[in-house]
Structure formats: C-alpha cells, structure tokens
Image 1: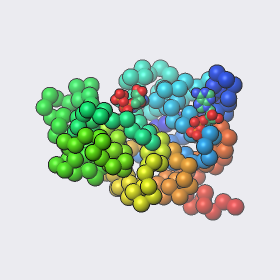
Image 2: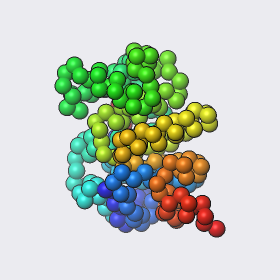
Image 3: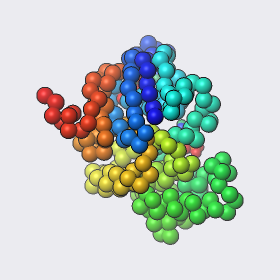
Image 4: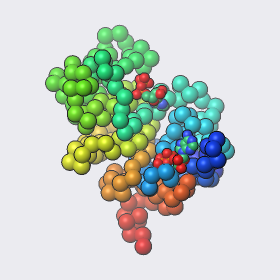
Length: 228
Ligand code: ADP
Ligand code: ADP
C-alpha cells in the first residue's frame, strides 16, 4: 500500500532528517513510528502527502509513484491528523467536520447527515456536540473532530502525528481505545507517530523504532518488546 524506497531528506540547512529509508506498510495495517524527538518521524509522514519532497528516493502509494500524483488529489486519498488539529473557530463541530462537502462529492444537503455519522463514529454524540463551537469542546473532543474530518473523504490512508499527544493521560487512554475500535470498523492504512513506546505497542500492528533518521527495528509489538 505504502512503500518507501531509499528515501532521504536533507533540509536546506544541511540537516539529514531521514537517511535512506526503505520500508513497506500493508493495506489495512496500523504502523506506529516511535522514537525520540528529532529523529525524523514527522518528516517521514509529511513526505507521504507531499508537504515535504524527498531529496532522493521514491514513495509509492498502491504502486503509484506519489511524485507523479497531483498533491491536491493525493491529499484526498490521505487523511491527516496532527497534535493540535486546527478547527475553524467560527464554524460549528458539524461544519468543521464537513468543511468541504462539495469537494468530497457529497450531494448538497447530505453533508450534515454525513458529518453526524462521522462524529458518531469517533464517539462524539452529534446531537450533543454538533452545534457547539470548538472553544466549547475539551482538547480530547477537538481531536475527535479532527479524526472525523480526516475521515470525511473516506481516504484509504490516515497519517496521524501525535494525535493524542496533547491531552492528559486518562483521556489519551480513552482516545486510544476508541481509535482501536474505530480502526476495526474503518480498516485504514495508518501511519501513527508517537514518542510514547506504550502507545506505539498498544496501537501498532507493527512498530517502526526510529534512531537518528533511520528505522532501527521494524517488527510486531511482541518482538520489539522482547528485544534485548
Ligand atoms: P521528529 O518528528 O522525530 O521529532 P522531525 O522529522 O520533525 O523529527 O525532524 C527531524 C530532524 O530534521 C530534526 O533534526 C529537525 O530539527 C530537523 N528539521 C525538521 N524540519 C526542518 C526544517 N524545516 N528545516 C531544517 N531542519 C528541520
Ligand atoms: P484547512 O481546512 O484550512 O486546510 P487544516 O487544519 O485541515 O485546515 O489543515 C492545516 C494544514 O494542513 C493546512 O496547511 C492544510 O493544507 C494541511 N492539510 C490539511 N489536510 C491535509 C492532508 N490530508 N494532507 C496534507 N496536508 C493537509
């Protein structure tokens, strides 16, 4: 589904953020990228939706070289959730979820219905929260809206960059549980960045353990935990 072939990224200032990365993510697989700050996780993710272009190497999505896919088209196939999702403050939760229904091919009028279904899916009751504004939500609830919005176009791929990193531990655990349940239902191909090994182990079908700019181990959670 997603394949990295000898991908490197050197930033303009000379920083080698990612160094000759080759790995593959199967369809429907949830891969967690774990490692300390600055080891290249976010750079890896941003190359998948072409927010950043690699210096060398190739990335394939379903066998297609992504450098040949128009970035706007590409991003319709890839949902993106970051640590602090940016919601429009003057739009309601429902409106934020269905930001661009016409772009998503939704018929006029069914945007609200679809948005409500998506909110249900992420565990946010649309009848309670749909008409609220972002400032009336908790941090965890805002992240749920971010996940719902990322799912709006029904993309096969989800990129999640520390999506639960900014909420307190109790809420984080709850969001993790909900996300695992959601993933059972939607079965996306997911790249999930975290610096929390417990989160990586709990969520990942496979774990990519990063060192500086490289993946040092790529294996199932049990094997990663069993490593000396
Ligand atoms: P992580 O997500 O693991 O924290 P990043 O991918 O954000 O790591 O960063 C990897 C390395 O690249 C770090 O050394 C970081 O400082 C550097 N870096 C990230 N973005 C830029 C940039 N725009 N310009 C220069 N260096 C950058
Ligand atoms: P907006 O709806 O204004 O794009 P977002 O919070 O959704 O606000 O996006 C924040 C930033 O992330 C923007 O620069 C946007 O272009 C980018 N972005 C949003 N969705 C994606 C995506 N699926 N892939 C790549 N970049 C995205």
